[in-house]
Length: 305
Image 1 (cartoon, rainbow, N blue to C red):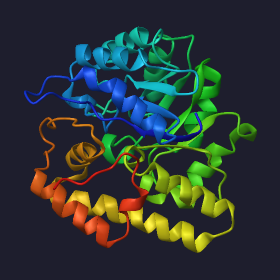
Image 2: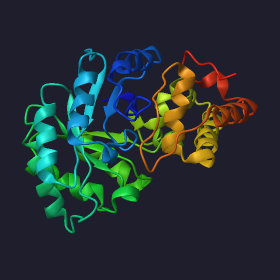
Image 3: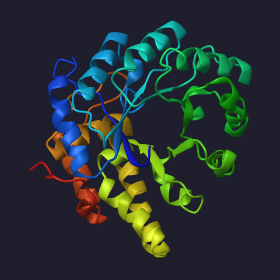
């Protein structure tokens, strides 16, 4: 996985049931904005509020429109290891890779315990790469990932890398360059993307790549053209976008609601996330316009009037 990978939302009908019919248009929108792939059923996709059956339906729908140049990853982590194994096995014929969070209620207390969990999931889909999803702010599981990698390469034959959603630059860099960069380490903190570039990052997974892919590609381009001031200025705009939506009703629900402005009505968010009203969308759009962010949205974009 390289370039921007969008952590996708779970589209809903007004009654809260899945809206699978919109996924083809959703995928086309991402491809139009040069997003390189979709990370399905992750934190952005409200996986904890979905049933195992719904998670299967979503990845099946995404796979119908998978192309060779669009990388499809399914998050299969679960507090119930057997459910995670079932999701992994089901994914094998539909995706390019699987990824798993650790259990987050009764947490693995040692690296050996975490490795056991990952091994059991990975061997349920042995023909595709397995990625570990490191996001301790939500899971509470926080081991040095370089220590995890040193063990994983010897115990998980299909170990592909890490979705690294923690701002720990020292550990991230060690993982990125482990064994001469032999594993795929994806940076997962959108608001800090610019800081990953000097380290050599080439792949990123995040929710705001749904909305602001052109902005992030310009950050990357500006950095590589030695225009650091421009790169940092654009990164500040991305942070402002997140902060603006978060203040209104929490970023997860607000980010999903914001997709309506791209012609993709993702429907309501499931509890405990909130759904923005049209008035709130207008308020957010005005604030973003004042900050000069509107030209950087993915296309098509149109504010609600």
